[in-house]
Amino acid sequence: MHHMTLAEIARGLADKKFSSEELTQVLLARIAQLDPQLNSFISLTQELALSQAKAADARRANGETGALLGAPIAHKDLFCTQGIRTSCGSKMLDNFKAPYDATVVAKLAAAGTVTLGKTNMDEFAMGSANESSYYGAVKNPWNLEHVPGGSSGGSAAAVAARLLPAATATDTGGSIRQPAAFTNLTGLKPTYGRVSRWGMIAYASSLDQGGPLARTAEDCAILLQGMAGFDPNDSTSIDEPVPDYSASLNGSLQGLRIGVPKEYFSAGLDPRIAELVHNSVKELEKLGAVIKEISLPNMQHAIPAYYVIAPAEASSNLSRFDGVRFGYRCENPENLIDLYKRSRGEGFGAEVQRRIMVGAYALSAGYYDAYYLKAQKIRRLVKNDFMAAFNEVDIILGPTTPNPAWKLGAKNSDPVAEYLEDVYTITANLAGLPGLSMPAGFVDGLPVGVQLLAPYFQEGRLLNVAHQYQLHTDWHTRTPQGF
Image 1 (cartoon, rainbow, N blue to C red):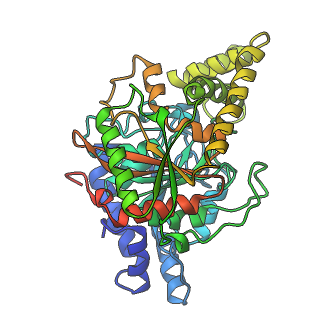
Image 2 (cartoon, rainbow, N blue to C red):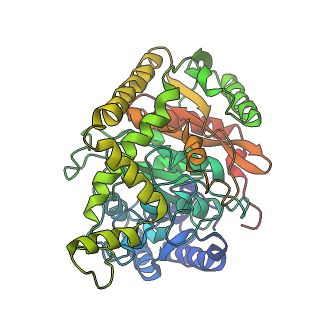
Image 3 (cartoon, rainbow, N blue to C red):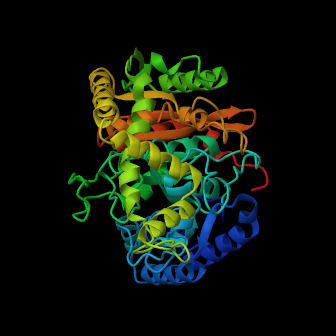
C-alpha cells in the first residue's frame, strides 16, 4: 500500500479495494518503524488520523466521491492546526497549540484528507538543509549521511521514504523545489497569492507560498486542487478562478516554446547536473517542444537582493515572539527588558538570530535606502527579465540546484555557501512566479531535479509538461534503498 500514489489511492478507495482506515493504520505503523532513521516528523496525530479516516470511509459509503477523500497526508509544521502543536521547528513555539486551523489545513480537511502528523522543518523555514530545526536534522532517505534540503525537508523525506503519498510544504526561496530535487520528488511552488497564507506562520510575507510535495505531477495537481483558491482572510490572496489541474495534464507539448537561460550554465553548476538538464531538454524536444536560448541578465543579483528582503521581513514578523503573549518565556526575568532579551535569545536558534540581525540592520535608519530599497529595485528588474522572457517562450527550464545534496554538517560553518545553493530557485519567489521541480536523474546515487517556471497562474502548464515528461521517463518511480 505504501508505494501507491495519491491517484492510485483515490482509485483504490473508489473501487473499495481497501478502506482509508486500513491504509492509515499501515502508514502509521510504517512511520513508527522507519521515521526514527529520518526524523521527518515532529508530531504524530494517530487519534486524529484514525478518526478522520473513519469519517472519510463513512462519507464514501454514503456515496460521496473525491480524489482526496480518505487520502493520508501530513502538514509542514508551520501550518496552524487546531489543538495540535505547531512549532515551526523552533524552541520558541515548542509549547504552542494553535487555536484554529490554517486555511490550507481546513480546506484539505473538508476535502477529506487524513492528517498523519506535522513534519520537521528548518526553524521558522530559514535554511536549505533542514539542519536548523530545534528537533534535530532530517536525514535524506537516499543517503542518511546527506541533507534532504530545506526548509521543507521533513515533508520531502517522509514522502520520498514512502511514509505517506504527499505532504504540504512552503517555499520562500526554493523550500519546496530544492528538497524535491534532493529527494527525487515533484514539488510545486504556486503563483504568489494562489494558495492562502492565513494560518501559515510567516517567515517573509511577500515571498512565502504554500504548495504540494508528491512523487508525481499528477499527485501535485490533485493536492493543489484542494489547497488553491481565494481566501478573504488573506489580504494577499488573489481572487482568480482555480482551473481543474488534473484535466490539463494530458495536453500535447507540440509547439511548446521552452526557454533555457544561458546564465544558468555558469561555473557554479555541477557539469553532471548540466548534462542531465540537457538530457531533459532532448526528451521534451522529442515530445514536440521547441527549445530557445534566452537571457535573464539580472539573475546574478537575485541572491544578495533576497538575503536583504527576506531577513528584513523576518525581523519584522518575528518581533511578535517576545515571551509575553505566547511561545517560550525565560525563567525568572528581572524586568521587561530582561524578559525580551532572554526569551528571544534562548528561544531562537543561531540561523534565525542571524537573519533577524541582518534584517534589522537593513531596515535601520541610514541603511534602509542603501540596502532594502535597492534590493526592492533589483527585485523589479528580476521580474522585468521574466516578463520579457515570457514574451518569447511559454516555459523556462533549467537546473533546480547547482549541486546534489551535501553531507550533513558540511556547510554549517559557512552559511553563505548554503545560501548560494538557492541561486536557481530564489528568482521565482522574488517575481512571484509559479515554479516546479521534477526528478531528472542521479549524480553519485543522489537525485537531481529540473526546474520549470511559467507565467503567473499557469500552474496547469507546469503540471502538464511535468506529467508528459514523467509518462516518458521513469526517474520519479525510483525508490530509495531500504524504504
